[in-house]
Length: 421
Ligand code: HAM
Image (cartoon, rainbow, N blue to C red; front, side, top):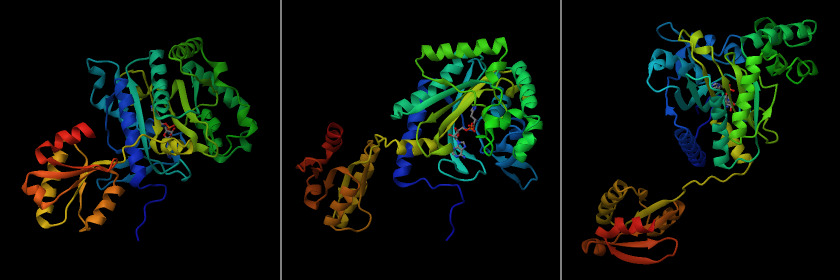
């Protein structure tokens, strides 16, 4: 038997119903915020991720699915959505569009060659958004509010919004120097990756999955003490707008994010659920004002976030939240002989064309078996065909809730179902 790849899931059955429900909720929230849907390829040039997510991030150094394609091109299955959206923004010259800022949302499959565990997969689905063309701190607050609203809508209660600022270039430079000085004498006590990070990007040490809990890392200098005046003012404005939107948050200086492109606001929304480990981070994002120009586009301020769909479902399950999923069909059409079957097939088609969810018998069950099947499908109505009724232009319909039966003209069936379902 051929089995699925490690760290990948099949979405089917009740799980797929929940999945579709969540995707609908996500779409609806983004549409309310006036974002447009964007769909970019899953496969991109490897260089895109090296130059955006960054050569000092774990994602690029250890986790990408890289291939040489049949045309000898280096390609990568996208590990996240931002890089592809920014590439598309530049390639399609969206910076020239009349309506600015450009507000885009997406939902799709991402690939990271990580060690699979609860809430951490190798193939996972991310929903997210990117806003390109504004540096207004009010937009930072808008973006942070999106997942907060989504989780509220879905009924999640124990979520925490953690925000931080990584400041501007001046801040980053001062902070990098401070970290280098701080870790100079102790770098040998940290893992090999951290030694490399020390040279490439010391900020990454704070995000280390191996040493992250060590006192030495916990006691490292904090970035907020190094914010330039501009960066500090900006961070305060973001907080003011969040207050105005009545979004509760905590400032957490340990949020540095695992991707290299961030500056200024960064944030994560975390579910307060025990034993979920990394699975409890529902989403994360931040501002990346340099990325568009680093990828050869014009200077463009931008910010976005992304969340894991698989994780969201996991947390909903842990919090025992029942989603309002439609789990019934409008009608099940039952028949016994061939003539009735022909009638069933055309009636089924007609009802579906009128917008009803209907089904009929395809396994040759007798009438008793069909009643059972209708119950399994949670059919609201049973349409029980009979040759005499058909000849007279009638059908028998049974309300599966009240168990009431009546004969009605076939011509009145659509109106009847419309009024009653
Ligand atoms: P990220 O923090 O790497 O950010 O991922 C965002 C979210 O994707 C995580 O919070 C988590 O919910 C989910 N996620 C990440 N890795 C996995 C995995 N292996 N299995 C399941 N879920 C996972 C980004 O990807 C940035 N592009 C976010 C962003 C958008 N920043 C600005 N714009």
